[in-house]
Length: 124
Image 1: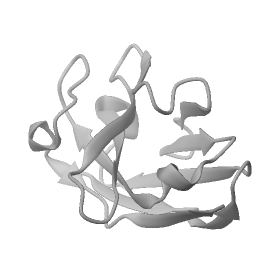
Image 2: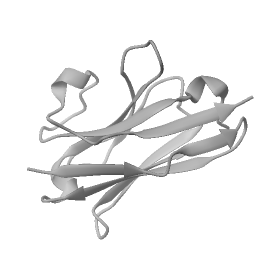
Image 3: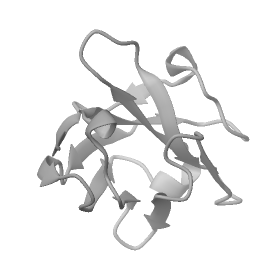
């Protein structure tokens, strides 16, 4: 099975940028569809972005599309989420998740492996 570790979160002012990393161990990350989810205080965990197994096609939720880029570095066994033009409403814990299935899944319950999360706080 794969283990996932997120990093790169922090405190940033509105309009700033962050690059989140999801490092995998135990298995090859390109064998999985990897998604980023986020959970704000008092809210449900929600899908943010995904990069599909095998095709590396990318998918984004509307609220981050155009401001974020998900990418995969097979040599480093790592998936990244570059987030630009950050807004206070982007404040959340960001989790990466993996599932070994073709296509994209948008529900947290569809994923088998999770990292511990990394906090992103955007100040106004």
